[in-house]
Image (cartoon, rainbow, N blue to C red):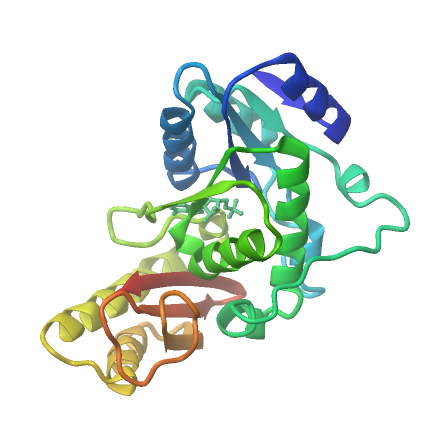
Length: 279
Ligand code: AMP
């Protein structure tokens, strides 16, 4: 497995090898959720294809008061995991090479990115779109794999790729969870024992709403209230948002139909966790 640290090195390696390229963009601190994406990428690439995992903690998607400096960066363990899961290369650039002095060009999506996490984290999706388009330009993937845990991110990237004619096929993979339902996340390591014990209320709330929808309840207000009631059983949980939205446009809905999404962001202490469920 190759470890490539610059765009030039990546391009040279791509030119020197052949086969379909499948990219898995990550910020590292890899867990089984990322592992599932890499395994999926390996299947999509086949024996003759190339699986590239990018590991880059992207500064432009963090707000000024967010966790950029303390975000975990266990590169050796990450590299070992990539190797075990059959990745062919890791693209691991430094912030200085991704954003050279004078960097002044950004990509903004203005519709799907506007609400939910985009409203709570101004500039977040601008950073995501910019880095993902740069990763697409450097790695030239035929296919890129993203996780539905970051549901809005999937929709934003799909819109960006369509609007800017990026020749890539996007594959979205289901959320991998801990046995108590908590969505796996690199940020779960920030949780203390009490926060970790209460965090599964997110999944319980979303499942309760999904169950009520399947039993005939379609009111967004009622379904989000079911989620909120469950989350209120965790005394330290502080809700950022709970929203019912159209699964494609991410516009708020008042009545849910099949394929819509209930998405949430909730703080446990300083740690902000997200999750979502499809009706
Ligand atoms: P991150 O390193 O958090 O930027 O995530 C990199 C990719 O892994 C994104 O496409 C995420 O949606 C995906 N991902 C993160 N956590 C999970 C999970 N629990 N299950 C599936 N995919 C995930």
